[in-house]
Image (cartoon, rainbow, N blue to C red):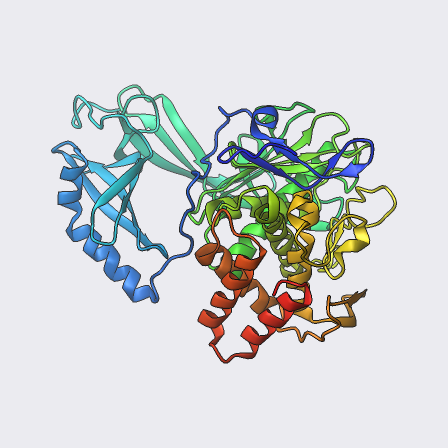
Amino acid sequence: MTPHMNTRRAAALAAVAAMVVVGVQTGAANADPNTPGDGPSASPRATSPAFNSASARTSAIKSAQSDASSTADSLGLGSQEKLIARDVIKDAKGTVHTRYERTYAGLPVLGGDLVTHTTGNGKLKSVTKATNAKISVPSTTAKIKTVAGARKVIWAGGSKPVLALESVKTGVQKDGTPSRKRIITDATTGKVLHSYEEIETAGVGNSQYSGKVDLTTTASGSGFELTDGDRGGHKTYDLNQGESGTGDLVTDDDDTWGDGTGNDRQTAAVDAHYGAAKTWDFYKSALGRDGIAGDGKAAYSRVHYGDAYVNAFWDDSCFCMTYGDGADNKSALTGLDVAGHEMSHGLTASTANLDYVGESGGLNEATSDIFGTSVEFFADNATDVGDYLIGEKIDINGDGTPLRYMDQPSKDGGSADYWDSSVGDLDVHYSSGVANHFFYLLAEGSGAKTINGVDYDSPTSDGSTVTGIGRDKAVQIWYKALSEYMTSTTDYAAAREATEKAATDLYGADSAELASVSAAWAGVNVK
């Protein structure tokens, strides 16, 4: 059995030995622990904002601003520093995360923002800073290099804060897109310290599995890069067949990416970047969640991992997704549901942190299948339509069959349709079948049906009939159970209890939804 690693776990879609089997990739082997990324801690994080109205959030920001002076004192900031409250999020556990901008002698401090994390009664738990450098400059009135239309600021994005000028240069990018470039220069020498394009472009991607898609990219220099400024700054890198680090950020001259085949190295990056964007959007729309960890920060994607690597994996230690190129090095494992699957391992690590072994490991894998499938339906992509098949586009088996089936998991030759006392002894990708089958039954019900052109015929362990409540409600129940009631050691019996509590919270103790949850669990022999 693959050893479990708590905070540096890498969860893989599948693995290949003599035949397609399943496994876990260890963080130490597959990712450089020194690569950039803000990985989740071992303890579960709370998830979505707990403010129930925009006015409540506005009031919280005003309250934070009124206390900003005492907060600055408690953080040991200098006498010339002030805090400006910009955002407040109260998570489901009552922790208040307050985001501040900073000023120094009345000047904006760029790169000096920070977030305080306090208990409900106001006790400071921790603080996250954009820089740990002391904010101080010799003078704010020194003779400066004049830049038309510039404002004076403190630049704290480098190793040492300096007096600087911030200006904006407008124009047109080479493809006709408007340009608004923000430029930071040293106020005394005129040296450019930092610059970036504020207009984020929508590139055209030719994907291998999802057809022609729009990509959010960023102009850089004379070209473009796969950086998604709309979604936390998600970046997509080419590992160039390496197995550590990040490789090279994927760039392009004309903002048209890939050719739709594995012959073009950009194509895998297109699918990965697109999948990450759709997963982010699904989390936001369906779950009210701002990114994987609920903190607005992006993970990153790495494509072209290893040589003929037939797998994809999520790694907590780098907070990133990684994709191999398949046995022929031209069939990257970057399908839309695979991207949703891998990112959702990060979501699980940020919530219940389900142990990746035994029944809890099966629930972990099933959660990724559940949300990966949900992303596929959410994307509403005509080339890769939503279905309850896992990895049907990437042909990992080499015969055109999916990797897994949610309506009847045993069709893959190894997954469990129903619970029994030996399920926890299976590899987690096979023990996941019980939860995958539960979710299908809860969403769609038992028996024969056709959905988006795919035929399903889902049985039950006792021959009972289960009436589905719809995928949207099923997603809400699973997410609430995961984020509020499941723990690291949750097994199938406890998962039934968690989802029944979630259904009760959402729909009521006498609801049809709760009855269907109980019936679906009974249908997979979790009683």
